[in-house]
Length: 381
Image 1 (cartoon, rainbow, N blue to C red):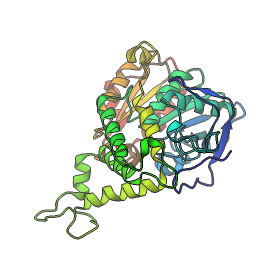
Image 2 (cartoon, helix red, strand yellow; image 1 turned 90 degrees about the horizontal axis):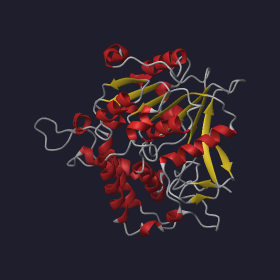
Image 3 (cartoon, rainbow, N blue to C red; image 1 turned 30 degrees about the vertical axis):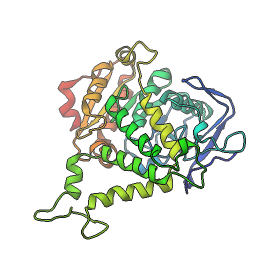
């Protein structure tokens, strides 16, 4: 069965499709009868099957990690295809090769709003099944930012015998009321589009206006006030904003928002978007584990916790909580004016520290306690 890929979505030539025909019992009580994951890999699995690196993507990302995290990839870098067997799979519920609401339903239609409710744990369990199918015995590092950071935490908790270290970037232990409120604003924008039809829309008549508005809301949360003002703020004595506006008398920042909205509806599906933000809102590492503190205290892998100084969506205080609660944690804050998107835009600023962390983790193993606050300044280096 081929997968539907949403509006005008072309998978990269390197993307492979792995199909699991075993039904998957989902955390919230429903069952997915079968599923497919789109994934890419780089490098080769060692004879001992112990050199894997799992990369987890953000909300609307794809398996093309070497493109959106290019500064981390390459010979001698933090993620090295000459040393590592690197795997990045498109998240369950998305539309870049993996099964989601835009995929075919067993009845011959597509899943649409009938697609079962997912959690981050469900997504990670699907990724774990892919790792099993690829023959991976040990995972040197799981790394991810934003939604990928939420998945990284679950990898460590669900597969502690296989995962040797983690790097959690611009993420939190559980979704805050702040994050959930922004998710709801995006859902409301979709529901306000009459073409949304409570999610029961045909794939040839999609709710583009609502999805574009949802994306515009999200884009505002991904940047910082200073980054937008630097790029699009009022020029001295001018009545319009700096930058390239669509019209001479318009605000350039409006053009920026409209550009992202228009591009997004060409590459993503509205129900997939809802499925993913719903899964993120369910995120809570403490659920069923005695609370957040108990869950994090039980992590024994070396962990690098990375914050972005200007992140307003997952503020550094949330990474500090992770750092203070995980026994073998090290903290890194990158200085970026780009808000939450700094983990992508300014990825080069953390490459050396991730590489150093990997070297330290390889020598210390699960039992060593990383030195905390007194070492932060020199570690950022």
